[in-house]
Length: 281
Image (cartoon, rainbow, N blue to C red; front, side, top):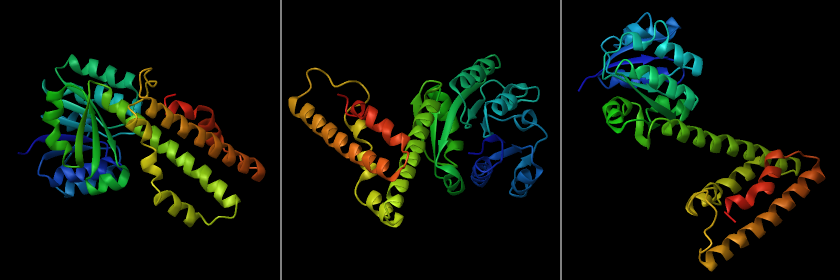
C-alpha cells in the first residue's frame, strides 16, 4: 500500500534510501539543499519540495537523513521544519546519528503537534544504503515503529525495535563504538606486523580465518557487563581466570615487541590495563 513519505536529506545515505522508497511505490516528496541531489529523484517519480515543511505536507512518515544535531533540529523544528505542516499521527524517523538530548528535545516538540518522533539509527554504511540492506535500529513507541516499518523496509534488511525513545540511538552508538574500536585495533595490529616485516595480507588472513571477530563477542556470551556473581560455578570462574592469565601474557609480549620496535600502541595499552573487566572478574 502506498504511503505519503517525506525524505529530508539526499546525501550519500539519504539519496539511495530515497531511491528505494520511490522504487517501492510510495508517494515520495524530497528535499535537499543541493538541487543536483533532488533532480534524479524527481526523474524517478518523486516530487521536489522547496523546504522540509513543504515536503512533509500530507506525509504520514518522514525520514530525516542529515549530517548532525543542528541540521536535524532545523529540519524538524525550525522555521520551515516538518512540524509546521505535519498532521497529528505522523511519524518522524531521525536516521541521523545525534545525541539522546536532541532526540528527546525533538520528541517533546513533536508531541505538542500530535506527532511521534522515533530515533532510527541506520547501520550498514553507503554500501548498505545502495543495496537497500541497512539495519534500522529503532527507539520509541512500538505502534509508531510498526506504522513506519513498511517504509523503513524499503531500504532495510530488518527493523529492530530496541526499546523506548533513545534506545535505538544508544544501540547505534554502541555499535559504532565497536566498529571504531576494531578499526583502531586493526591499525595497531597492522603497524606492529608491518614494523616486524610481516606481509599485511598474511595478517588479514590470520585475523579473518581464526575466529578473531567471533572471539570479540565473548563478553556478550558471558552474560553482559555485570560482574561475575559470587555463586557462579567454580568451573566458569576458573575458565575466565585462565583467559585473563593468557591475555596478560599475550598482551605483555605484544607491548614488549612494540617497545622494541619503537611503536606506540595506545589502544593495546588500554586493553592491557582493563581487559579483566571483559572477563567480568
